[in-house]
Length: 122
View 1 (cartoon, helix red, strand yellow):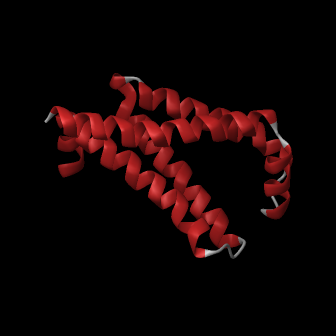
View 2 (cartoon, rainbow, N blue to C red):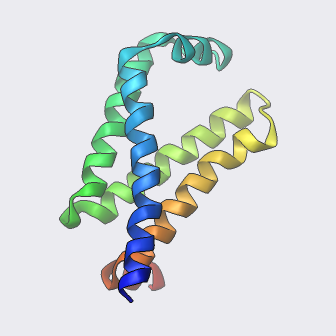
């Protein structure tokens, strides 16, 4: 049981670390972000708000009391990423990457605790 919990923490932690990285680079608006926003036809002015939203969702996921709402909000964020990739005709991997992140996040949370498992089984 403890091993399963640790694996869940690692899975969810990797997703959350990636999301922190992604949120920070959005806030900093580094060159790859600028390029990606041009390719996606999104105004660069949305980069910082999106980065802040990502970081806020991660913060909610890290706190046990708000973990589920944070995971739900991140899942919605991933859905927006899929929709954006579909809109520009992205390659299949680019479509699956946010789906994979969501699956790893929820799989990890399921392994972490009974509260999450109960919520998912309803």
